[in-house]
Image 1 (cartoon, rainbow, N blue to C red):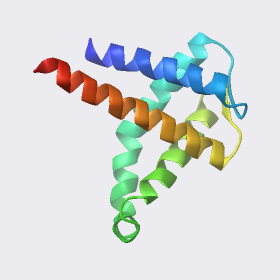
Image 2: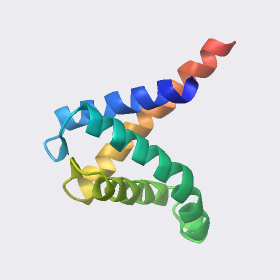
Image 3: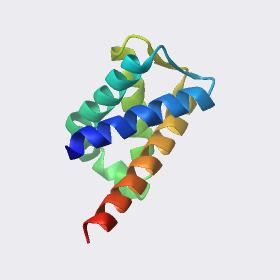
Length: 115
């Protein structure tokens, strides 16, 4: 159930960012759901591998290179999902920042509700 709630929140974030940013395009609600699912799968499978492979750069930049990795993973998800597009690297970077902030906030709120 928790995964479904996270996926719904991520879908709403994709829709909200597409509404706010003119460089992010989503065709409909189903596309936003599939995009949120693709981002979740890419972040679960590829992100740890890429962070491990770029560990020296991660250490030198004190973890800021993760933002670059996140932007490229969002661009990958936009490439894979038809109807979801991000126009360029900077748009993907801003999208990734907003997406991460909402996920961190939800995670903190969720942990607070457990106690």
